[in-house]
Amino acid sequence: MMSSPPGDLPVTFADIEAAAARLEGIAHRTPVMTSRTADARADGKLFFKCENLQRGGAFKIRGAYNAIALLTPDQRRHGVITFSSGNHGQAVALAGRLQGVAATIVMPNDAPASKVSATREYGGEIIFYDRYTESREEICAKLAADRGLTIIPPFDHAQVIAGQGTAARELFQAVGELDVLLVNLGGGGLLAGSALAAQALSPRCRVVGVEPEAANDGQQSLRAGKIIRIPVPRSIADGALTTFLGERNFPIIRALVSDIVTVSDQMLIDTMRFFAERMKIVAEPTGCLGAAAALAKRAHQPGERIGVLISGGNIDLARYAELLR
Image 1 (cartoon, rainbow, N blue to C red):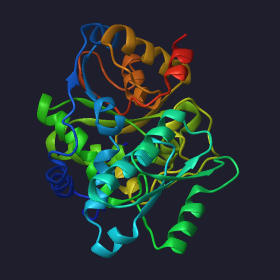
Image 2: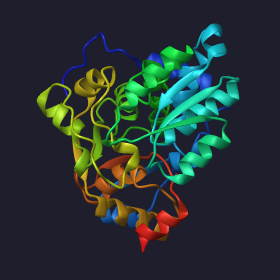
Image 3: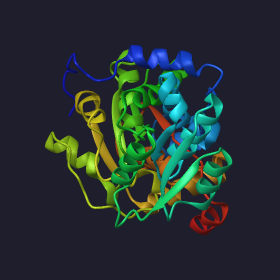
Image 4: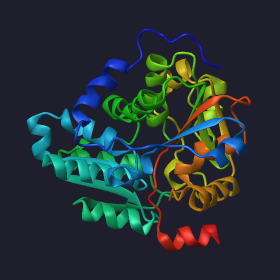
């Protein structure tokens, strides 16, 4: 359960405000959608922040752009590198292109083809690896050392966390205070940033992370009070298949997050279908984590106001059709 926040958290709401200023005119202010059918199913009032409509198809451009914007001139000349299953890689490639910084992306060889293609189109150099037998962190660190590149990790980075927090900031600005905010959880960048925004703009709001059942390292970590590492999980939520939370993310999550719940792959498919049929929204499986928890009433009481971050919509159309079928 949430405890009183310590005064030495690695990121503050002031960092989120500064990130929002840098992102003005760069990141889209994505719409907030509602649905009476969803409200009835959840027995509450739902507000969906549609980051599936963000530049690059996911919220990740927020953190990537913010981090690259703060590089030194020497770092910018040498370029950046990251590791990503897709969305963060796309975001770093796009943010690098927008700021004239070369980007190298270490991606799993089973990453969705649409994410690989988009990363290349944004100008990223892709290095593939096997997520089940190789360490992406080790590959990234070696390439960074050999080439003089700056690592922009997908979640364990103060300016990435600050950038991701701007999505929840916009949600609170649009709809006011909430009772619950449901946030998709992989490595913890979006959850940590969202929790900081909630503390500042809706202090009574309970912030709840949502993970795939097979990848519940965050849930285990929150309950144990320390970072728990798990084997590489298998789930259709490819953007949430991390094996541990970030060192910078966890103190924020431990201090400000009320709970972490899980949902099954079938619940993600059902939510994707609901979005397509009833709200005309295309969301990837990872993007449906929070919504799946809301529709299943996993983290709220009847009649509450619930914010849901739809984190992304990047999915191969063939795979999308296969899952919905």
